[in-house]
Length: 195
Image 1 (cartoon, rainbow, N blue to C red):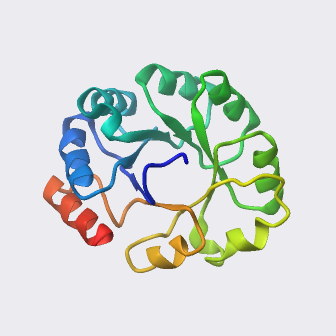
Image 2 (image 1 turned 30 degrees about the vertical axis):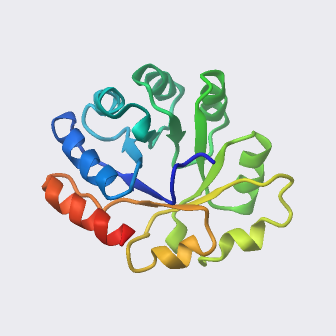
């Protein structure tokens, strides 16, 4: 599997100054899959700092990756895998050249089949909340290979269990972390999610 567990913490907007304390709270609560989006300040530095501090304890993804140049930065920073909001063959191939695992953003059946044919590691259904929670079961049958589905977009503590009934994992962002919140709040929210 691409992820350690079933919940990926999306820390959009986090800074290198704050990242270690927030990730510590997540890890202590049982969330060891973390995404640092590329539209966060000094995101590559945050990835380097997390890898240096946590090593293999945290499975670390670089998210919102939309260019091959960003893929190069991911590889240099030490990300374990790449998440994208969309399907871009050039980005997928660049990840494969760098031996980076991929969780590729898709929405339609056409995108799902195209991503599967490219050999991506996992499918990120985005935005998942705009589709029925059982979307994977409706589309998995015709796929030529088994591939994990991750729901991202509109997932929170209220609907997480519904999605995990049908998806292999979920990505949770703003209901878990918002820029500027104290690490103690991230820890409390993580503990409530993992309950």
